[in-house]
Every structure is written in C-alpha cells, then in structure tokens.
Length: 237
Ligand SMILES: NC(=O)c1ccc[n+]([C@@H]2O[C@H](COP(=O)([O-])OP(=O)(O)OC[C@H]3O[C@@H](n4cnc5c(N)ncnc54)[C@H](OP(=O)(O)O)[C@@H]3O)[C@@H](O)[C@H]2O)c1
Image (cartoon, rainbow, N blue to C red; front, side):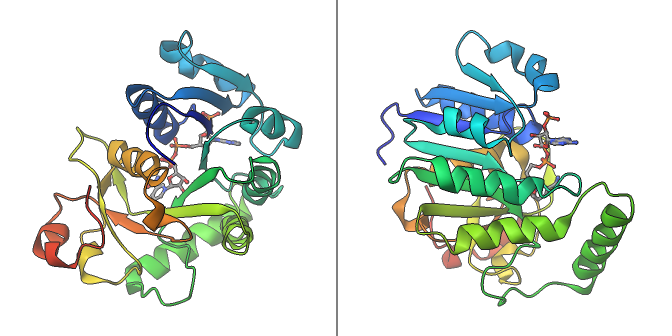
C-alpha cells in the first residue's frame, strides 16, 4: 500500500494508542474512519471535524462491517477486556469484513508469541502469570482471549501484521521504533517504547510490505539496547 492518502479505519480509536494513531494518520493525509465505544466518543472531540466516527463495540460485527468497507488499511487496538471473547470477536470481525487486499495491523504485547521461539525473563513470565490469574479471577481481562485472537490472525490469509509492544511510556516521539522477531533478542532488552512511537509503527506497517505476515516485537529506537545493537536492526525508516 502506498502512503498517498488512503482510507484507514482505526478500531479502538478513543484509547491512548488509538488517539495517537488518529493523529499520525491525519498528519499522513489519510481519510480516517474511527470506531470506539459509544461512551467514549467525546474522547475524540479534538478530531471530530476531520474524521468519521462510528460508535460501537469493537466486537460488534455489524459495526465493523460498516467501518472497514472500502478501507485500504485497518489498524486495530486488540484488547482482552471482560470474559466475552472481546479480543477474538474483534479480530474475527476485522478478518471477515475487511477488503480482501487491505493491510491489517493489530496491536498487542510481548506476551503474544507466534512461533514459541520468544524467550522471556523470569520476571516477565511471573508478571504475565499474575496478570492472567487476577484478570480472570475478577472477570476483568482474559489474556487467553488475546492469544486466541492472534492465533486467528496468524492463521488467516489476509495481509496482516501483529505489532507486539514492549512496556510503554509517555513522552515526545523518538522516531520509529526498531523491531526484532523474537522477544529475548538483545536489541529488545530495554523493554521500553514511547506510546506515540508504538502508534507510529502501527501506521508505518501499513506501507512496509516487509512486515506482512510478521509479528514484530518493538522497542524505542533511542533505548540503550536499540543503540547498542543498531547493527542488528531488521528495518529502520
Ligand atoms: N499498556 C501497556 O503497557 C502495553 C504494553 C504493551 C502492549 N500494549 C498493547 O497496546 C495496546 C493499547 O493498550 P493501552 O494499554 O496503551 O491502552 P489504550 O491505548 O488506552 O487502549 C485501551 C482500549 O481498550 C478500550 N477499553 C477500555 N475499557 C474497556 C472495556 N471495559 N471494554 C471494552 N473496551 C475497553 C478503550 O476504549 P475506550 O476509549 O472506549 O475506553 C481503548 O480502545 C493494546 O493492544 C495492548 O495489548 C500495552
């Protein structure tokens, strides 16, 4: 997909990552269709005159079918809220209704593994275990459903990319993050990315065909590990 003002759908647009993506997409000259929960429409007020907003839950198939129609690219914030298969319902709807040749880019965290070759620190594994247990016990988040969602994506024949974010922080942009195929690769060791740059990478993936059928794990380009292993970079803008 060329970056020359395409129609982009952003699903989950009212969250922190979503709003950064809206901002980057507008700056890139794209036409933007935004999906967000009805109670969150006011979080998009600053963009309201420049984007089309479709209120609805992201796993509502009718909402997604309407939103992605005619879009060249779809950016989806994949979140595992509740116990009703929210993430996998969202992913399935996007996979089912997006235009056949659209670029589909999904967000998630490092805990998602595509081929089982990621290596995690003991601390990371412990944190995911605790989060998974508490999330399920409180019926608050279902990490396993985000795993199910990405499995659907990995097995689909669409032109997908699953961007796996490290720990996030706020702050001014440092530029496009660097990426590697496996968590545990030295370049990722700093485990820190600015959220604004996570969004930049999501937009970038729309136009970088080397990222089709990849699950890049990203890290901020100004972090210690990225600087130390700059020669290992698979792709820089
Ligand atoms: N947070 C991290 O440290 C981190 C680290 C690595 C990767 N990630 C990934 O980054 C992406 C964005 O995550 P984020 O943590 O930065 O959050 P975020 O950008 O603020 O996005 C949260 C999303 O979840 C929605 N949401 C909140 N409560 C909900 C509910 N009860 N039911 C349904 N939807 C609800 C929000 O919609 P509303 O605006 O309607 O509330 C928003 O679209 C995710 O894919 C996540 O897996 C996050």
